[in-house]
Amino acid sequence: MDAQLDNLKATIARLQVLYFVLFGASLVLLVTRWSTVVWAITLGSAVVTRLYRGSLVNKYNAMLAQGREVPLV
Image (cartoon, rainbow, N blue to C red; front, side):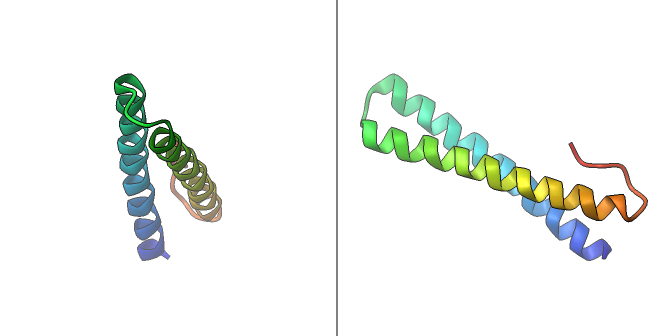
């Protein structure tokens, strides 16, 4: 179970980085007014990434509730 928790925690960390990259890219595209469609896609992808990461955090916390560690925020 520890390997599964470590894998889940690493995936959550990667998704957090991906979220920041997508959100930052959407802000750059918005400021430069490069393309509304590309901006919408990057912002939408950031939102989907954030929602998926949230579901993984909930799963991680549920797994920990059965165990011994403190929840990941």
